[in-house]
Length: 132
Image 1 (cartoon, rainbow, N blue to C red):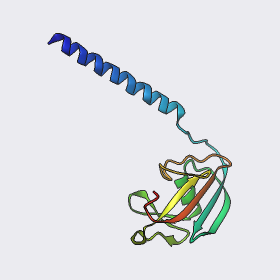
Image 2 (tube, rainbow, N blue to C red; image 1 turned 90 degrees about the vertical axis):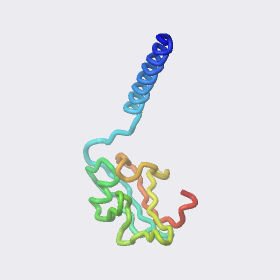
Image 3 (cartoon, rainbow, N blue to C red; image 1 turned 90 degrees about the horizontal axis):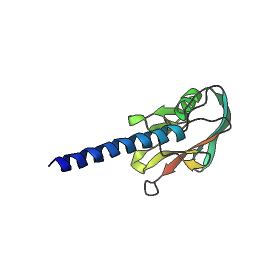
């Protein structure tokens, strides 16, 4: 019985060490926001055409702050972006706003997208949940 307890304690210690190592790696490699003014290109696409595009100067750290600064967005339920530039996505028609940063779709959303000087963001009205 004592050998089994010792084995379990060693396994728990190894898991704690691995969890600490993974946390440390995540903290070192994650994107951290840069303080100060940044120039960011922001484009809104709806119904297949650009309806708003501008290079914006901002002190915002994350995309959500930039979108709120510009007055382009209205938050929906659970912090999902619902209305952009006066156009509300109709969930009944499977419409939603897709966010991309430097050409790549954001998986974490506007609250987690770090703004970098010279970055590019696109907010696109998208129809259909299948390709999601």
